[in-house]
Image (cartoon, rainbow, N blue to C red; front, side, top):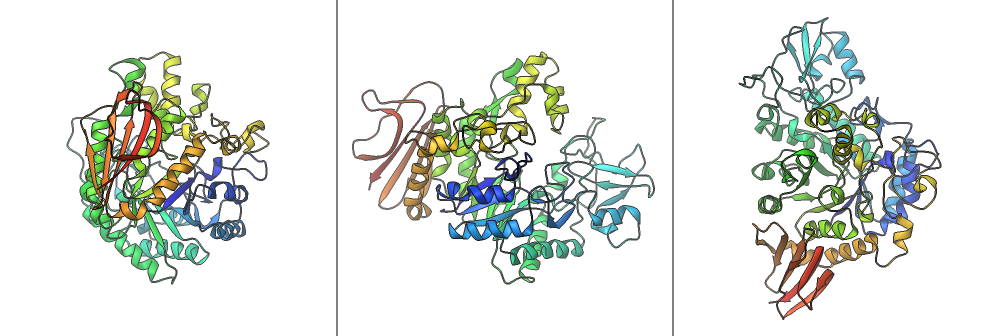
Length: 537
């Protein structure tokens, strides 16, 4: 219940050598500031050597830190300083696939008889007939044809990111050796990327469909029973190679509540996308292309995950590097909306993940022109979805939906480039909002409220670990009302997730723990207002 993990997208966090790219020494310099939040761990987005096809999720060398981020010595400095603040460091470890420029794949591609050929997934194919009609998450087929062998290799993501063959024990052993290496250098654990896809249905059957284009086929490559066997083997192989304790966070984007207990056989904390229950903002035009929370469905799904999480911890989050900022996506961009969204997660069981800048209520970073989004692999699908809109409308939709929206340079101060660097950031994106240092000096800022609320969560952590969980008014589309109850007391969290006031009626025997926007004179909770109450039983 008490873990508070701060997610650092290093490339956009703090640049120490003025090349426009955030780095480990920049993180070292900013550690004292973010430690004030009371965080217990930092999750670092990928820092290994990579061609950068997918911002580091295409690893070409698991044992080398990308030079733009620093060196092993720099990482050790970060680990040592973090320990002074009782902060653990978790690395992002990509184990579903490698870069096509990893030596394993280069050897596999060059020689069908190489020991590394079976490190990847190959099937017979022709230039026009892939082995299956499965679709890649990045568009097109999951299969890339190799003329020299008349076979195709499998890639769930980009063609430059071939999937590893987890049916080969050597793959598991080599990845476990990677994990042990970093644990022995002081890392405390890993965020494991895309772990729901390690196992693929070995029958390689096409999806029955009349469509002539590839189709998503998660029934054949997501959350399969064999997946959990692979994860157990991987964890055992790590433990056999190091005496260091370790924590495993696992990203299983499509994992449903029924899958949760199986993941907790191996994983300490599960990161899913399943709680993002959304609906369109309207039936046509721009509104049809933008999402908002479907609050009743969101509450039902949160409860379903909570009910399955007896043996592990669910990740509690609404923002990360893969999604636009929640305060823009699900709120109105205000400090009040940022506070409201935090409070919808704050008192649930699980480990809270804060994405850099979330504590400042930073909003979406945007490019001024469509061509600036050329490196976003989702741009073609965005343009296809919005083909009937004007160019101006298309740009607005892409600005609000692109992953780039959450990857603007961190906003530290009023200096040029917001204190991130003395030069423009790598992606020419700055994060809009009030800078960190200005908020730190204010008692009414988003940062001040975040610190207060995180301390409140910590204060009640032991009670909440034993408390029952209930949502009142689940069907209500404005009100989020969470009840956490022990034998001695009840916490009531009320959030108005709308832009209109809401009448709520506290009972007379409650104590107010936090009030942002509740007026007792008319019992109205303001738009994106929060009221947290305690009742003795």
